[in-house]
Image (cartoon, rainbow, N blue to C red; front, top):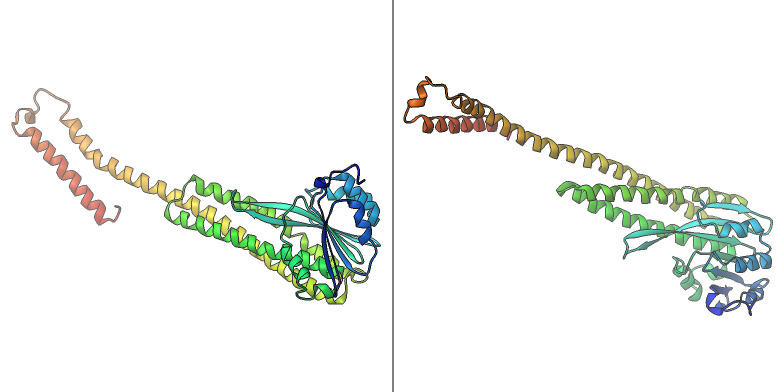
Length: 334
């Protein structure tokens, strides 16, 4: 396999550790994974691609992973789930990353395989939210170096779930900005942004909601995959997921309310315009009547010969307009 592949195409990162030592390396050849197959340390193998079928099949044979699971890894449109086998557990989780330049949230599928002394993670591409876990292993912070692979998996999932809070904060900031636009000057751009946010939240909800059941299954299966010490931390992750779900539902309700506010605002603006037009039309009704009467030009109309007729008619029109405007103001119509 080493001769058939270019080193630049290999995207494998290995972190191997126990409570006394730590080792980190980017592998050039997948066959080096055999060194970490059976040892007394915990191995975290991170694969930064899901489309390399040759690499996936090699890892599947090396760790005895079912071919259907290897096939599922490359299918990135799946919902979060968990499959429990005799020697390992397969988990799919959705990871969110915010692109500030494009102002959009990218959803990436991450697959985990938990064994007795290893965790294999498959990502769509390089870049993740696991740096806090890497630093904890490198600097021996917290409990992770003294715990097993199950605690490592719990820490990785916890990092993904904690990032959900950051994504929700970004969504809240966007909603606050839209709320200000609704109050000041709503436009078609405003409703388009609301609909875009609603779609994003729906995608996020679909990714987060099934994760509850994944953690529930992890809590139930227990030994040999999950120790009692790790269960406590998984329960904390479960509580965070519930909080995220409640927060997402709240954001959905706020956006739905914003749509109603936008429609009401547009309706009010239309009513204001119609009110002004109606007032103008109402003022011109008597003026049109007067102009119509004196525009008939009948031969024996007495006012036709009156030298002050034209100025008088104009004065009457102005007086009528002023009286009507004062009446409308008194009724608080304007």
